[in-house]
Image 1 (tube, rainbow, N blue to C red):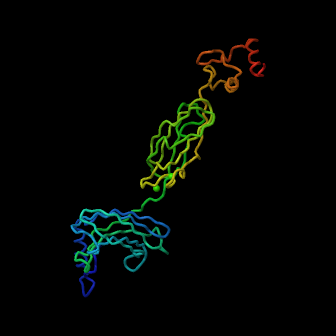
Image 2: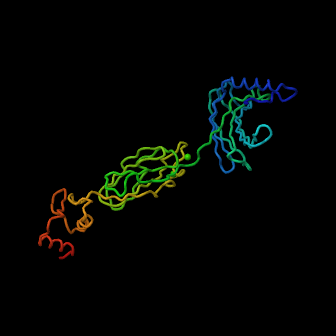
Image 3: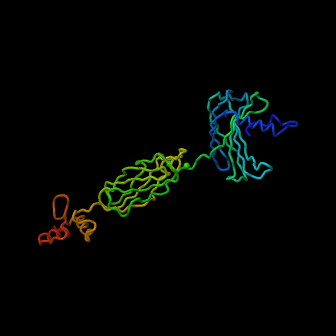
Amino acid sequence: MVDSGNQISNGYVDFYNVYKTMVDNALARPPQADIQAYCWRTANKVGFNIQVKNLSAVTLSSSNSATVHAIVYEDAHVEATNRFARAAVDQGISNLAPNATATFTLETPDLSNVIWDNLHFVVLVDYRPSGSVGAFDTLQAAIALPLDTTPPSVVSSVRADPNPTTAASIRFTVTFSEAVTGVDTADFTLTVTGVTGASITSVSGGPTAYTVNVNTGTGSGTLRLNVVDNDSIIDGSSNSLGGAGAGNGSFTGGETYSVSGMPIFADVPFSYWAVSWIERLYAAGITGGCTTTLPLMYCPENTVTRAQMAVFLVRTFNLP
Ligand SMILES: [Ca+2]
Ligand SMILES: [Ca+2]
């Protein structure tokens, strides 16, 4: 039912046939307006954003009482219809020529004692073809869709590869609370201990879970991936990460990798039983291995001469 019942408000009426004709005619007529409407809840009010394109041949204005209406109704047991109108707000259309488009923002008063999950939101545009009196004609009606006002957030940053790792490249999976766009390498930083030269190399995937590739650099230590909010990450309704403002959506609570770089000596792999002691001697400057060219070798099974032992002792005890 999209047309006014005002025309049959008095006297005896054959309701069935009059209403049936009215509904049939309304359904057969092409829409006279294109309506895109969104609604949202703010405290106990409902806001509407309504875009109207006038598809009729009439300029809509105050002279023909053109109006945008927003109606909130609740599923409730009220007489025959099981519908109970909770709010109806409207705004006059001042001047909307054929094929012109305008946007209207409406808000209901506080809605008290409603069951919010039972509410429905409808908008419509009508006017009086005859001028300032007589029956209204509804140009179109539409359901207002819920507008997303919830900003996205970072849910987690977890390891996507085995840990600990000796790999040159590792991956993190960063999951957001909803689909987002605008995610690139500039949205991440690394918290690093021990390792040098680690870097974020690429971002792929989406729209909810992204894979971030990280170069593990050189040396051994830990790597954690952080998300740095600069409002470049947005959801489908342009809500920015954490809400408007840099930093409010940043995330530093992710998982950490333990990274072991390449072994220092090519003949002392990580699997060698004494690797940790040998690399500590190298790090302390006590031994440089058994070669002077790359790759460094340690010759772990060779015997030590008395002269070599003298060098070790001088370095170890920092003798003059
Ligand atoms: Ca959202
Ligand atoms: Ca933000």
